[in-house]
Image 1 (cartoon, rainbow, N blue to C red):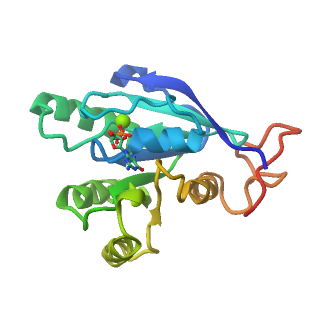
Image 2: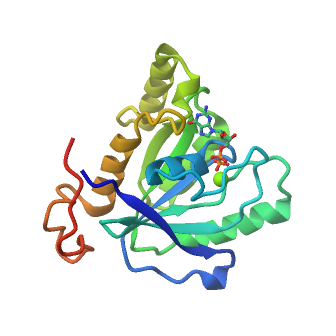
Image 3: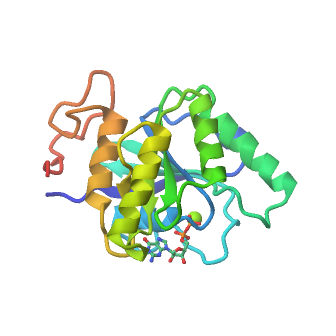
Length: 218
Ligand SMILES: Nc1nc2c(ncn2[C@@H]2O[C@H](COP(=O)(O)OP(=O)(O)O)[C@@H](O)[C@H]2O)c(=O)[nH]1
Ligand SMILES: [Mg+2]
């Protein structure tokens, strides 16, 4: 099986740099420090593709990572909810993220990263409500699963499933690699539709380059 790859293709700090990239996109959102950059690195199988930090709240850019061989984008949104960020910074966040989400025909879903150690928090629900209010699907993903006991984690997954009236969220760990392959499979399916990754992608969407070997089904 070929491992999917991620390459940083574009970084956007300002509204006027936000041109559409014509390929399916899944955005990654979550509170600062939830483990978003670490998860990007785990998906990429690289240590330093995305910068991780113990002092969050600094990155205020949208980072477009291209997933190959499929050609869709994972779009790392700036973290939110960090207490030390000023009101002005928050307003900037909202404007940039709003502009990105509004009228983006390529956005298939927003993967919302949630800390597996905690029961559902209000600011996570606020983010989810905001995304759903834009008519965009939410894909809940638990991070830092290695820091939890399986029983506690299952309880949190159940709580989220009840709250969101959905399947239990996928549990991942960037530390151990738990759930990372499963996450790739879900991302691929959400971005490209069922059956994608097989020789012929859905009509009118990105296809694997000729000769590119699609990763095998689990
Ligand atoms: N144990 C453990 N720590 C993690 C995991 N993911 C991230 N971290 C740690 O959590 C902190 C924040 O991670 P980072 O990826 O920078 O979070 P971001 O602000 O959401 O991008 C760092 O100290 C990471 O090492 C994980 O899966 N397991
Ligand atoms: Mg980060």
